Image 1: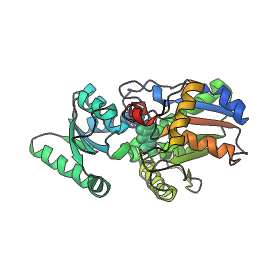
Image 2: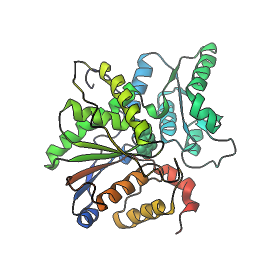
Image 3: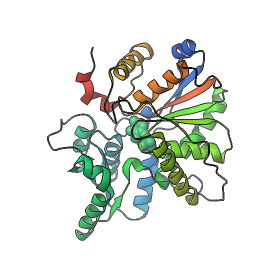
Length: 328
Ligand SMILES: *Cc1c(COP(=O)(O)O)cnc(C)c1O
């Protein structure tokens, strides 16, 4: 229960917080990483925290089929397929891609876990994904099923609660570690993770900086989107809260060549972190965001911040379809 809202218990929580000793020394900061890539194996990553709330809501409403969407290598779509399998629910994924795409990474797992897949073009995905999911829902209803739509990334009011919950987990861990983080840093793809953390910081009046690195679109887009998500989440909570939306901080400039496309320097960075820290970042989210964070620190942008927590949001299955892009 969180602020009066029920959730499933699927993720392995709390996820550990580790100090990155070499990077800390190099940057003269205290750099920590929260291992949300350890939430599980099959449903690893950040989406399972949101799905604990979304799927509980679906089950409470009597649903027996989940519908969601994402890119071909969507971690969220894969995590949804896994949860559906676990609870004996049907699952339809609307994926941006083609039948002929390499059966690899998350897409391979989607199939392995038994999800039905509907492929759509990039344009249809961008402009019509919600309409396509609604159509699927209507068709399934005609067949007597009880479908439930989870939006892209499970980023809506209910899904964002997963990271409000995570924020509270971090506050407890701060006490046991004897440290206070000045900033929490995370990749931003559909906004729900950031929105939940931001809300936690506001509700607890903790005064940390919540910093997001967008991996698609623009900072401006996500600031607007996160405001909407905060407004969607607040009414779900027991009680009245005062929230100011002025401190949303999204740093643009690290999308690179585009969503899920990599520059050589990003891949080299992932390789360096693997070989020096023993940590596997993913190419689409944590790789770009952590690269951004280290760059910003080295450019003197965060001189006022000493204790920095980066959340590793998972996504490692997405590295396998990219294996040929690495120069090893
Ligand atoms: C979806 C995702 C994110 C971004 O989270 P949002 O809530 O969509 O902004 C970050 N990292 C990974 C690995 C993801 O799959």
